[in-house]
Image 1: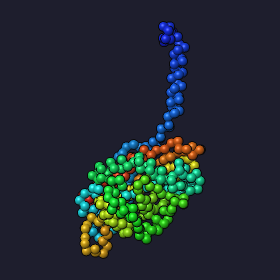
Image 2: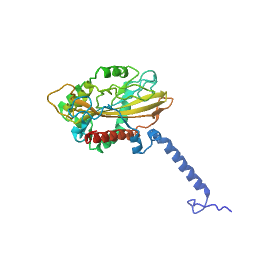
Image 3: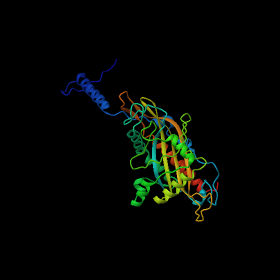
Image 4: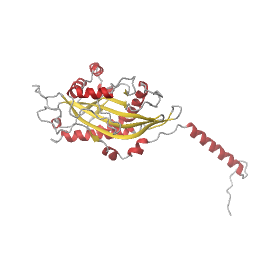
Length: 339
């Protein structure tokens, strides 16, 4: 025989009516609370890359010239990093930006147009959201190798440095110029770039291979103008040991979804071998390192009205940390080894 539990009705009696009413009230309250609570963002990055930091870092690949360890004379396009003795201790993050792949004419997201072209406002929103979610992890990743990554609020501590940063013009060699012409256009086109508030947008010349998700730096043979401009001129004017540029690629897959196709991080610094005689083939600045990670991760989903109902910016922090740690480990190994 099933025994039914009795509950007090407040008048000393035992009835199920009071309990049923209380249960219904609690159920309705819970439903209303759930409806009032915004939908929690999905962890799209975890679904694609997992949450194991070591495994994510294993997916990060070096992206730089494979031309040995440089010459101890300081000549040539490859830095002799052993002359540094340790990784650069103060590194300025001079540019952090997001680039639209230019491979789709439909670009959903708040602030983006729903047809034809992306708006400048929209891609800047994405850049700000990604930056806010990842800058802490990026700093932590570099800190593991003794590198202090500085933001503009930190390295622009004098009027002279602010002027130098604002007036710096990124110049590239002829090969880089061709690649930049083919990948970077202005904000009236279907391929746009956006940076967080307070950052300059130093658009690096890159490959554009959407099929292979390859948007890496197009300077495998070296680019004297770009390397010396960023690595020597800008670093010197900001009073830092090196500068870093990081960018990510986004692409609309349909009218309701925007994906990220990968992220890239490059470091430039002054020639580790100091010389005053200015011999031929002596570059005052070099590319110190470069890393990339390729993937396809859903970043934003929207409903038919164009409202964002799901997004994952927080998950990008794991990617940023992996890029920074891989960079730090590479620089640590190269500055302490002749290889």
